Length: 320
Image: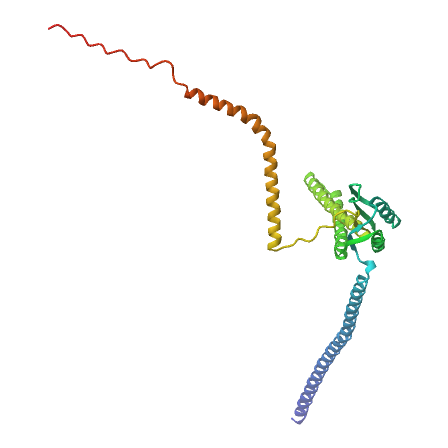
C-alpha cells in the first residue's frame, strides 16, 4: 500500500509540473507577441512622428516658394517697362505757317521711328488748319509731344494712358489653352473611324481654329497699340478759330440758343418765300385776270327775255 501511494503521488507531481511548464510557456509566448506588437507599433509611431515634420517642412518650403514667386511676379509687374500701356495724345498748336509746321511735324515723327497715319488740311490762308495723326514708338511718345509743342503756341494738350497688362496676360493664357485644344482635335481627327465622327471632328476643329485666330488677332491689335502710340495734332493758322469751348448751361444760355434758333428759322422762312415769289407772280397774275373776266361775264344782263309757257288748252267735253 505504501508503494502504491508513493507511485500515485509521483504521478500527480509530474502532471502538475507538466501543467506548470505548459502554462509558463504560453505566458512567455503571449508576452513575446505583445512585446513585438508594441515594438512595431512604437516603431510605426516613431516613423510617422519623424515623417510629419519632414512633410510639414516640405509644405512650408513649397508655400515659401510660392510666396516668393508671387512676390517676384508682383515686383516684376510694378516695373513700368514690363507693363503693356497704350499711350494716346491730342494737342492743338497755333503756328504762323501751317504747311511748314506740318512738314516739321512729319520730320519729327520720322526721326522718332514713326510715321504719319492720317493727314487732313482745310484752307490755305491764315485760317488754315491741318490735322495729323502720328504713330510713334511708345518710348519716344513724351519726347515727340514736347518737340511738337515747341513749333508754336500750344493751345491745349490731352494725354491718356490705358494699362492692358492683365488683358495681355489673359490673352496669352487663352491662346496657349486654345492651341492645345486645336492640337487635341487634330489628333482625334486622325483616329476617326467613321464618316459621322470625321464630320463632327472636322466641325469642332474648324470652330476651335476660328477661336484661336480671333484670340491671335486681338493679341496682334494690342501689341500694335502698345508698341506704337497715337498722337493727334491740330496745327492752326493765326486766324483760325479757337477750339470749341465746353458746353454751358443756364437761363441766359438757353435764351441765347432759342433766339439763335428763332432767327435761323425766320431766315429759312424768308428764304423759302423769296424762292416762291417769282412763281407766285408768274402764275398769280394770269390767274387773277382770269377771275376778273369771269366775274364780269356773270354781271352782264341777258338780252333774250324769258319764254312764257303756252296757255293751257281746255279739255273737250263729251256730248250728252
